[in-house]
Length: 114
Image 1 (tube, rainbow, N blue to C red):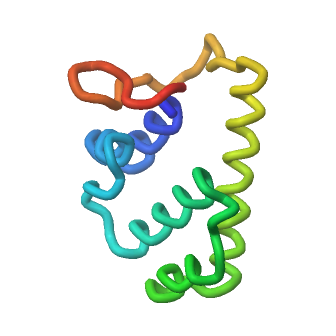
Image 2: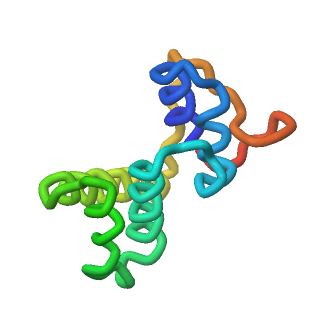
């Protein structure tokens, strides 16, 4: 999570966005489209067996078509696969990781694992 946050800060140039998303995406200052995407991604990650057709309606309501929803599902599933594989093998960041890792949580403590 730390290196994804560093990438987001580098791309967006917004030091607080990654922190607010990591702390609680529901409270982050993001638009309705991203909010719907994050809700879907969270449910697919934490409770995949509970996802059903009704979970696609909020995505459609913010303008995602079936192809975009398919790609979203694929990206979420892929990241879950890769992260679980890395966690299952005890993989850590490379020693030569080039982006600065800035703690995401308050008081300099990381809000999520790495």
